[in-house]
Amino acid sequence: MSVSHAPQPRSSGTGDTGDEDDQGEAALAELAALLAGVADPRKVRGIRHPVGAVLTIMVLATLAGARNFRECADRAGEMPERLLELAGCRCRRGRYVPPSAGTMRRLASTIDADAADALVNAWLRRYLMPTPTAPASTDTNSTDTTSTDTAADGENSQPGGDQTLPELIGLAIDGKTVHGQRPTRLPR
Image (cartoon, rainbow, N blue to C red; front, top):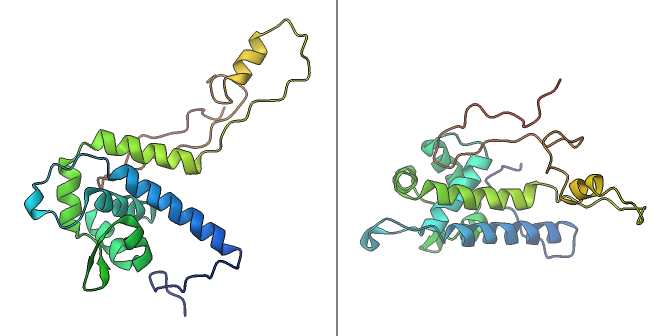
């Protein structure tokens, strides 16, 4: 019986999931490295978990459906050892230990939330948003540059254009939900 938080055997890299695992691990390592750059306001003496590790665990828990710090700690306790290792959690007696709900709450209330939010949003945008591609132009002798200039700037550059934006989702890593979010273009 497979349980979501049970340790899964690592693939040997010969199957199709090897590349996906490597990409996921690389994305998680990138997130942890990004969040390690957030200024840590805590005193050096009492730090047990690096700021990047705590914030990475909070992001993963929030993406897994956690809505407050207690739920974040519950989700963190269910995470496989490999995720905790990649997030940068501390190793104690041969096991990776996730931060507690209190640690998450204290850190989230003292960090620069705008900086952390910008880093998380940039990371999410990179992996979740499709990259716009410039349309191929068939007419090279066209004198009308207005239509080609706006199309070359990107699909989502004109709010009133024909391109529709994907639905936006609000994500807060401080345990609060984002209210009042709606798609940029409303249905008519």
